[in-house]
Length: 389
Ligand SMILES: Cc1cc2nc3c(=O)[nH]c(=O)nc-3n(C[C@H](O)[C@H](O)[C@H](O)COP(=O)(O)OP(=O)(O)OC[C@H]3O[C@@H](n4cnc5c(N)ncnc54)[C@H](O)[C@@H]3O)c2cc1C
Image 1 (cartoon, helix red, strand yellow):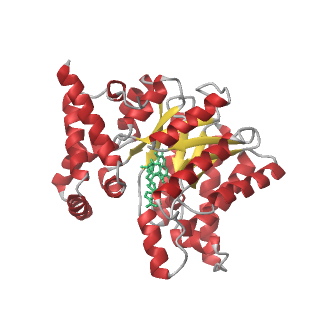
Image 2 (tube, rainbow, N blue to C red):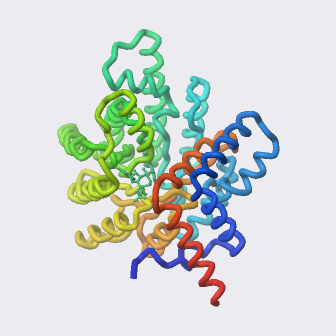
Image 3 (tube, protein in one colour):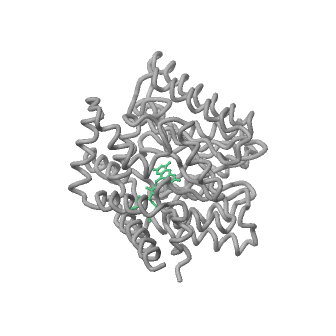
């Protein structure tokens, strides 16, 4: 029997009413036409401050996928997860804003999260997105070694400073910090910055973790080369590995601009590459720690198999698993039940700022064949089980 099928464990915290509501929501997300229409209406309404929208969003998508509007409000979810042995990773979800005041405000919020979470085992990691600290075009220019103007140089220095302040504070407070991966055309500069931060703050233990998207080609080679550099400079590496969330955008841009598609040719190739990423980490645990950010059951099981083969404890401090809040509870709670380091990304923020994250999530769920069907199947199974009781 597949190991992640225990819906009683997965949904132990959910009432019947909550489960039915979640079912209804995933059913809506399953319809591409509805999702496209819904996300457009939602973005438009939020943009124009329609007052009724806040309440609707808070009672539906927000309740399923978001901790709350503030850190304090989200602590209820943090505590509920921690009672079940699951750590929370606060994800301050402001996407798509590109001005210096917002970059500074987000950086301040991340530093506040660090201070707020010191000594709290329920919050094992801090996370941020590189584009929350600087403009994507600037990352692209830096990654391509384009000569910057003096004002761009100053702007980039501010990006580096924000990275450094956050990583330094994490180092001082023994908190791990994970840096998300985004679009390929900004990622070279982000990788370089992550490596600088690792060199500075990962001398004793992996504090700074970069993210590797295995749906990309060439990422195994990057990890090999990076490991070589890390050995030379004598620091530890932390990697979160994911498949990657921007496939359609990547393919469309590559086609439009006429360059080689940077994404694996098909799902099977991404799966194989992800599993090769698991192998890479498991074969270098003396230097590399791994966070497996995935809703894929086969990949999660593969990590567990590899841990067993190496006689590692389930809660080995070099290995973490992560899913997004509101998704794949069957994996998260199975893992925590067995003592693995299980975590959830827990987005939070004001409704209007979180809507771009939510619509991205809904679109991704619609476009990624299988995920929504999987959630629906599990919820239905649990509702049936409760009915039979
Ligand atoms: C804790 C956590 C943190 C995350 N952080 C990031 C992050 O920093 N950056 C980021 O980009 N994403 C991130 N993601 C999202 C992640 O990249 C995936 O989009 C998502 O998890 C779905 O992939 P999966 O491994 O869960 O499983 P699956 O459902 O098995 O795989 C779906 C994924 O496979 C790939 N895929 C699907 N069809 C094809 C195809 N035809 N050709 C090639 N590849 C295909 C795509 O990447 C797709 O998202 C994170 C996810 C989690 C759970």
